[in-house]
Length: 358
Image 1: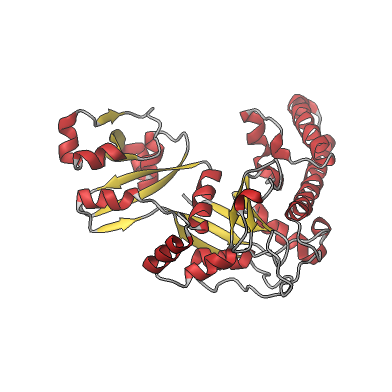
Image 2: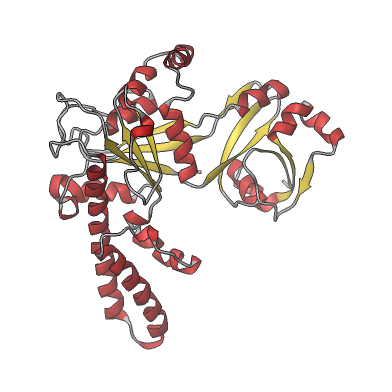
């Protein structure tokens, strides 16, 4: 399952530094001037999951394969981006291609790093970006409304009327400066809106980029429209230069239980409404990604597309039970393994063995 999260924000707020730390690379150009990133950088990052090591030990697996998530570093937006300022139209088109948005706002103070608005104000950063996303969507909805009204005739009048009502509702929302996703929609309406690729319909997470000595609990909520996490991109950049063992020791020395990047990856995974199911045996222990609510045949199809049609049943056990009881052979004796059919909704942490016809 290929799903992506776009990292957006004003220039010089730490997007590229954060991306480089995420991907443990120097792929993104992180320089002290606006628009040092033009083309988006793409990196695939492993999702941390402590369950994999425990499962592999029980199954004596030869390999461990985590699930992954794709991050896209998108060039900085500025006020007027929706009108083409700072190559805004090009950058906005990159945002349309991702499934969710991580918006980085700057809370760190450094006179050596230029702020495009000459002031450090996380709420203002968010307001500028959100306004540009709203204005871009307003253009998209206006064009679609004009097209639908022009073509509304004959037998399609009834459907056109419903579409016009929906677009009018969103237009009024956007014109008032509010995000489209804060409205309520029916499933049919959501399907009808898919091809518009509205920016303000995408799920969003705010990342507040702070100084190393910032007190997280002292920071205000940037905006009520999405949740937020706090990260020091500079610290994460330092951690990325260390080995895994050194990074763990350094975090322990600082009194930090979890790196900011681990928080971001897990939050991004949740933002996309994803869950992890697992497979475990001697060849490998592996994590797989599906949307929350996916049924067993769909999950099987993530492993191999032919498994959807060939699905017969699935042996399912909770991860903790699998570990405690000592793997597949012993779990069958406990009665904790279940046989599930086509209507079973897969849960996060399920260890699954699929039976399929070939």
